[in-house]
Amino acid sequence: MTTAQALALFPLRDIAATSLQELMQLCGQRLQAGERLLTLFGRPAPELGVNIIVVTAVLQPAQGALVILRATAQRGEHYRCLTAQHPAAQIFERELWEQTGLFPDDHPWLKPVRFEGERQQRMLEYPFFKVRGQEVHEVGVGPIHASVIEPGHFRFMCLGENVHHLEIQLGYQHRGVEGLLLRRPVWQLTPLVESICGDSAVAYAWGYGAALELMSNQPVAPAIQASRAIALEMERIAMHLATLGGMATDIAFLQGGATYGRLRTAIINASQRVCGNRFGRGWIRPGQAKPLSEALQQDLTRTLRAFAPDFTQINQLMLAARSVQARLHGTGTVSQQAALDLGLTGPVARASGVALDHRTQWPGAAYGHAPLPMVTEPDGDCWARMRLRMREVDASLAWLLQLLGDTTLNLSQAGQAQSSTPAALQAEALCVSLVEGTRGPVLQVLETSAKGELRHYKVQDPSTANWFGLAFAMRDNAISDFPICNKSFDLSYCGNDL
Image (cartoon, rainbow, N blue to C red; front, side, top):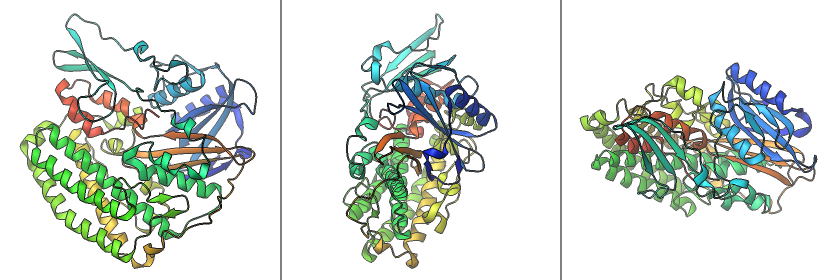
């Protein structure tokens, strides 16, 4: 079944369930034809029988219409893996194996993702790849990181200072998020959804709220969509500034580190004045968004206009500094073909010339009213990832000023409350929700039972696919390049360790 929206509802009766072998064969054919695998996951299906697993695949063809494939399988069933021919499938097949026991034969990299189920706390059994040679040595970093970021273990296999292979082991803080989402009333999940990945709270809350509104047939007004998009672009600017500041600090360009930090404070403080939280929590609820009074619109406009010249000036200094150019040009390069093969997404993919941005491909009401340009860079190195973030901030800034100055949107009416009684969700349905967050598309898939109750909640952060890209980018680079490569990717640990 297909649809051409980033938010789509599929009645389960309209999706034919095949065997697992047929589903993988169809996936392989579509991937061979150039389609993109957005997700592949499974869940136990006690309503169909003991040890039955339902598998769902979501694909995106070049023309933009989502494709849903479904299959039923027996727990422990084997199938021919996709990864050997299509490396972008590696993380999905590993997760499917870890969560359901379905076994991908000949998978070249079958390793735990987040140590859940039978493998809880078994980190020491992780099968690290070995590079042999008398002059090869290993350097381990983590899982207790020297900085303030979250736990992950990085094992470098080096010859001298050059990295031959980097293996990244995550999953130290597996939280059981998908299970927690099924334990509370479905209309009261926003605080939990906002906590899945704290610096992407707006993207997650928007995707969750939009899914419930579609499943309960409660469309929201354009002003609410516009308020949500404003929140999302404020979040994007703030997080790109955090990344740029981190990159500047890691190469000792301290003027950049200090200035980007100061500018970020102005942006997140402005978000706090709208919703009471600097990370945008509370801005979005199902059926609602924070209203932007005339005074708040003027406040945001003043903040952004004051921000713009300082941002341009520090960018010019950073781009012109020879020390910055020498450190970032040609470091941590991921070619366009490699980005496509690995299924990279978000700014990391766009910095390698891959034109993927759901805000421009599926603009919806908010971005259809004021379109955003597609921003890409061709070179795929740390310099490209830095420049792309600068250009995306410029694009978001221009878009925000345009929207805040549009008097036809009536943003002060955005918070108009819906009915206080939670509406029933469509029964036996599957809703796919995609929101282009700071790191790429935040994907959420909600499935309801015959009674309209939430049966399964699939969450997928864009970092999940991009961690492998970071390991790939480090090959043949000096081990001292890791901090700037890592920061230029700026991936989420908790977004992976659900």
